[in-house]
Image 1 (cartoon, one colour):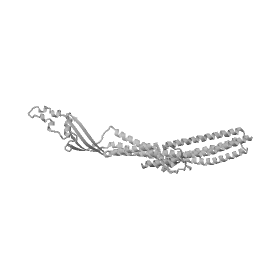
Image 2 (cartoon, rainbow, N blue to C red):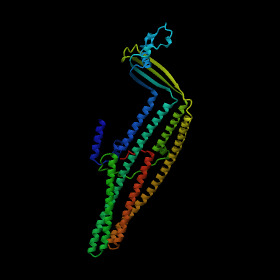
Image 3 (spheres, rainbow, N blue to C red):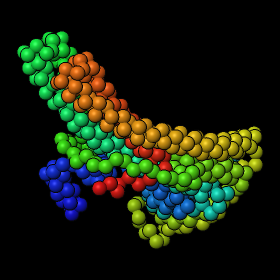
Image 4 (tube, helix red, strand yellow):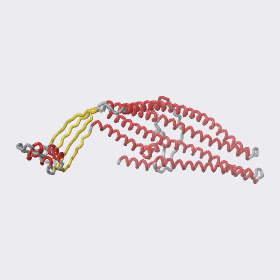
Length: 450
């Protein structure tokens, strides 16, 4: 109840103000539907392990049999089990020692017994003492499958956190671009008014005004597209967090570059951890198959009471049985050896796949790090080019007012400025995507933003 109250108050606090990135990352853990599904899968695998491990402790069963019969064999056995058999049940009523054909006499009481009730209450405990490590191997496999489910959940959580963080930084870039484009749009509108005045005074032509209006329409269209993308991002965040999101507090900083070594990647990468865990599963499968060459030994203890009515004179009619059983499969047509060799081949295959996964991860690491370096270089260059493009545009705008340049020149310089703004947005987005991919590859913590 306290946790529910905390979540309720926390949600109210979120709705009362713009959603921050740390708050969104907390909500991902608590509310994302795919993360919840992965948690249920983890719980299922945990119960699967408990079921496999429980085989070590055997099983205790209570068995209640209720029967009524006049079958000769069953009636006789039931009486023996109930400790109620008498000499009459053996047919002694028909025994006549003076009869020379005594051996041919059919005892009627034995062959045609009266209807017999049988109530048997039995408590039976069976315990495997030795199975050639088969039970342990299957329990270990279930435990390792539980670990794979845990890694799957962590991977799902990392993916959703990655998508959430990327959405926040995409929103920051969008809003930054909208600010720049709004400035450009305002300048175009101002230039449009200047052009109208210059037309009145005979210093400009109508075609100049058409060029300005065309550029204004183009910039307005881009602004509408960016606002539409902003709306789509809010819808996507609402889907990720499983609640409506209408306002967020975007990060006010550029994403820091991640520095991680190859050894850290190989140690923390979830795909590699899953591959190593799957290799252990294959190794235990081999152990389980090899146990087919070994005997199994089990113990059994049983107590029971049987009578012609339920629990009648239970103490006098009780009995017990203790036993051991050894079972050893000596020949199965070669199927056991084939199963062992198949398990061995699968284990070797998984070793190869694990090695391949490590090499593939390192290849991804090198590719991402190279792309980040390229993006850093482009961003540094584009920032200078953007500043220059803006200064050139402002210079040409002033020259146009002084009739030292044409409207076409002004529009071209303004287009160059706009092009640099959009290009910088694209490269920054590519850089962020690569950094997020690197964090995901290294399974780094992504919850420390402020």
